Length: 337
Ligand code: SF4
Image (tube, rainbow, N blue to C red):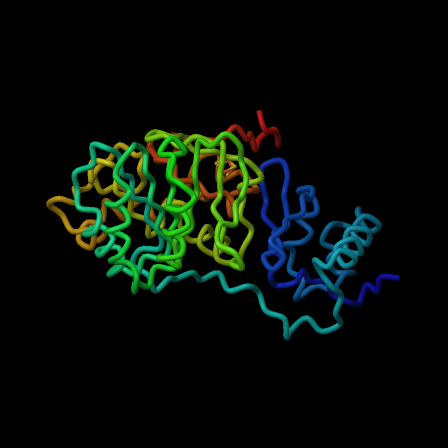
């Protein structure tokens, strides 16, 4: 039996997010979300620290008393919230996000036309404390060029190095195995393979080579799907404050051009004549960092906006921002079209 004198609180890491037609609760600890109606969102964001359950019901003119009881009990039963007679010790989630890394992630593209010095790019990214480096190989290039360049990262602080190689390179198991044995932070994905699978080439090790039948092209478009949403503390806080796809990201295209993302048209410099450290200080380069989903048309009305990772170019039309590569989710109909 629900006691109207108790307070109902969501767990601090269960965050309600409102969309135009539907809402959800992101469970940042479990990495899950629960879809809820907008009416429940409005109830959940009322001041539960000041008002007990009876008070909350009063705020809604006691029109939904039975529904509110049922909603709260459902959320308690499913570990999204709890009842308490004393809410004061419980805190709201701090919304601040910062990163000590000047660059959090980078994508470096290489094809047979690429003339730039890959080693110098890696060295510069390492100096900028880059955490995630993705290397995309598009053509039939000499792997020794990449392997030699990777050597400069042997003692780097880069946490994850993802190497994407095309299946048509026909790299032998031996070559692939040597790369992951020699470079402990490198993971390899072979794209354009006949089938998607994972191979454990190194006996007794959890390190695998991933094969995917998906293609990766120079001009690959953004892919949006609920499967690709990321529910996590870091992603949520980054997306509340910044553009989570572009914040502290720098990309080098196959010509050595320095960009916010590979598919963007805007070029801020070239690795042959410019230093990444100087380019990322430019206000025009950093502008995209701050264009978070809350400021972008359609996305600002979408309940998935703090879990949707998008690298899309953003354009300003009049006073409004729009993504150039948008998704097929329609938040005004709550439907994927
Ligand atoms: S691109 Fe925008 S509208 Fe589409 S799912 Fe992501 S946040 Fe929602």
